[in-house]
Image (tube, rainbow, N blue to C red; front, side):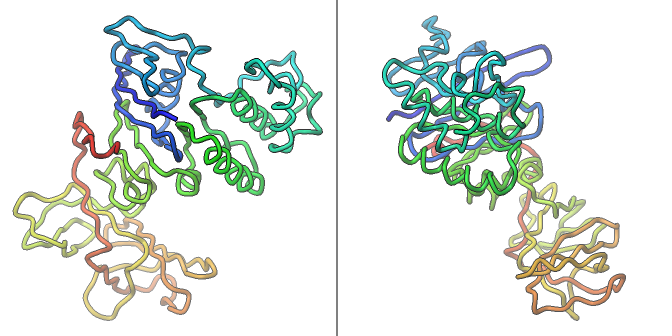
Length: 354
């Protein structure tokens, strides 16, 4: 199956979206970002429900949209299975007929039965949407997107209304389906656990700009700037007010960076929660504010001198001092990630999409 390529620009009132993205035919590509950043808009542009101001969208050799050539295929000709965030179920149709909507010619009834069974919806086949829970509606919307035998799969928050137990089984099913079909798949989500469990690649969208794109583990481990780090759940972000002799400093204290500051210093630094340890020697001055036992490790909530919170994971065999006690925290070089100011408008290198 061919890749899905898009390089487009879209404007609405005070909002501008400019994104270039390549979705391979294997694996899952996730899009994350704050509310209002353009994730759902990008899905709608790919599906043909919104029209870009300029650019091009291609699925392999097929051109879906090209502003210069005046090509704009309607949604039904793009063969994209789209799951809407608000489900968009037809209230007058049963679950089975909702799933059957948009079926290509052939054994549509058999395909519907398959997806009702795989998504545990058999007992709800004759119900109307108003008689379903939010999680059940979500599964119906997912079944409809999959049962249409799409060539591209576009999913907007597919697991957000599903309880934890069912979410885990749906994640496994989703991975199986994508592996079976080998089709470009885009998953929009706010849930970083969904991304870590499912996505082979992740794009970070901020204020209508695709800020970072690449393999999931690489993007999570090395955010490009402080805004990307915030989206990816990096809690331990410290502002840097100066840097001398390789030491970054702020009201929170100071830490040695792995390298000099001769070429400028980062706007922030982030500290990985795994790796730092309590010490009687030199290190960051911290106050123990809370200790939570997580089974295999302990989560320490510490307060720095400026009252900034710092979350650290310690092995369960290490016993921290009592709450309120002042101590020191040793932070190894490889636990410190420099975070420069956002480079707005910077193009993502082509190598990120290969």
